[in-house]
Image 1: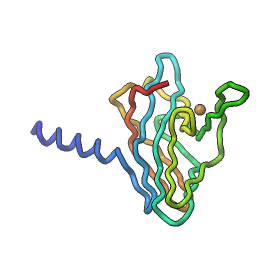
Image 2: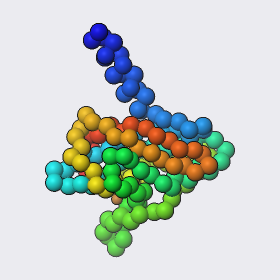
Image 3: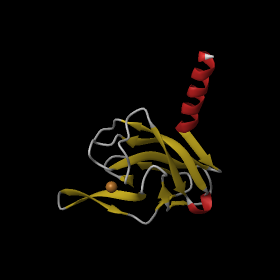
Image 4: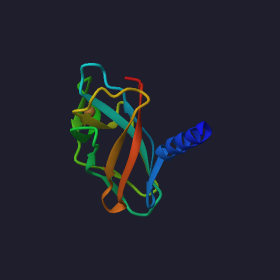
Amino acid sequence: MRMIWLLMLSLSVAASVAARAGELVVSDARVREVIPGQSVTVAFLTATNQGTQTCILGDVSSTAAGRAAVHEHRHEGGVMRMRPVAEVSVAPGAELRLQPGGYHLMLFGVSALKSGESIPLRLDFGQCGIIELEAPVVVLER
Ligand SMILES: [Cu+2]
């Protein structure tokens, strides 16, 4: 019985590693642990476009967050700032990395998410489709 549980657990973990909509693959999704007392966090992922049409990430959401948005970090006058972006495109054959210091998903109105948990993410890539996945909550570099 215990072996079956472990097997199911490892299968569900493996399934969360990559999610696909047609020729678009999202992998390495992860959500930063929420700092006690805060209600905002970030999520990162890699989107790989194996198709022949441009994929545009627009709407993002999570049932675990009151609101979600795509943000961009950029240096302005020596200061790192972030701002919302309406959409990010992934050209055919290209890879889009949402990572610290660059594009990221901002999650507002989240509870005290701890490492080991996971939350659903819904990513609308327009004509390339919608990807829904479970992203693990992890301790991430700042
Ligand atoms: Cu941000």
